[in-house]
Length: 141
Ligand SMILES: [Zn+2]
Image (cartoon, rainbow, N blue to C red; front, side, top):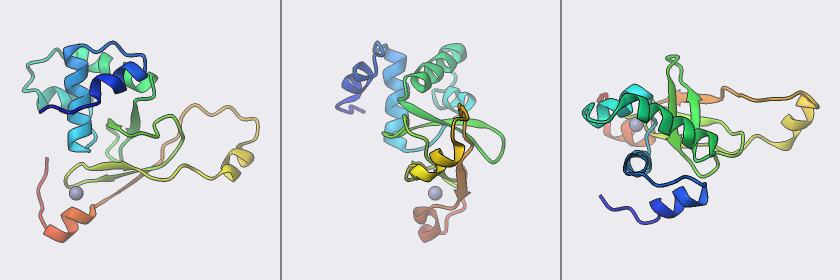
């Protein structure tokens, strides 16, 4: 699958585009789903090096290219979103894995937090997405 803009997006975030990095970003962007390291490894039929996938996710996350979320099952997953640099809640469908960014937190949260230093926030809504509700499918990915 050829997705225009992937090379540009990587470059904009200061990431050197290797074949694996392009593939991982392509999967995240084209599926709209969140993946754990293990799930991405399995997605590639375990043909790619697990450690390299792990490093790729971490690099993307540090570069604010993808969003990291601790899921309700305790699994850390990552998904592509344009607002990864901001603190915002996410929604994940537990049936199909579709994950999307919700609006950033309002400024009064920042005021309430005052001068506390915040480096992580666990903000995830979990449920069934509109598409899965409409189709009434009970598929697992
Ligand atoms: Zn769904």
